[in-house]
Length: 236
Image (cartoon, rainbow, N blue to C red; front, top):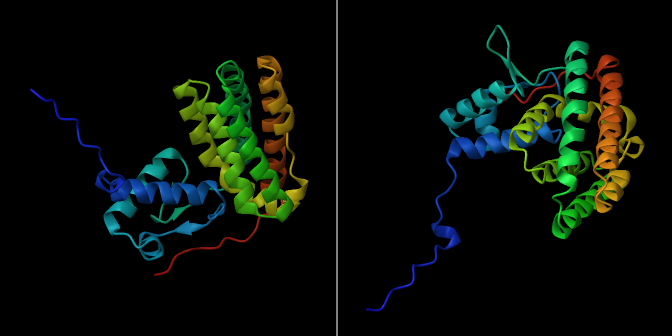
């Protein structure tokens, strides 16, 4: 009896992600990468038109992002990107400095050559975005650098927790860029990459702690003075 080989599934035959997941990922990226600013309002109708999506998946994406803390529902049922209070910044700073250095330490012993090369590629793209004054490019590659490293730690509970923290403070990085400009942003990635290449977990953790501390100091300074006026993508 001749056994038949299983048919290979073509890329076009693979099931598509549900519409609500696609919309969630799109809106989440807009929050992470500076397309939506703190205090900015979002509406179902506005997002429907902007994303070319139906009401149900947009509503579900908003619900999930509200649960993640990336969006806030006001008493009048308006949805906004939350602005950070001093108390919120204090908590984010504490949690980031506790968790992200630990993820860097745990990732140090698990990085292979390919992963380290990927981190260098993200850092190169980040530096290129800084030199061009490309705010979205900087925010995108900075997040990807951190996320790639944390994924290597094989500590999914810690990594997921940190990822949700990024959704809370990432919109304020847009304010930081507007206040200081990309060329003046702190960068401890070079020291971190050196420590990772040397497999020095303590040095990697300390470089990450300093990177987080510097970033949160600038967030604190930027969002507590001279906040920009709110804008909106409401297209109703």
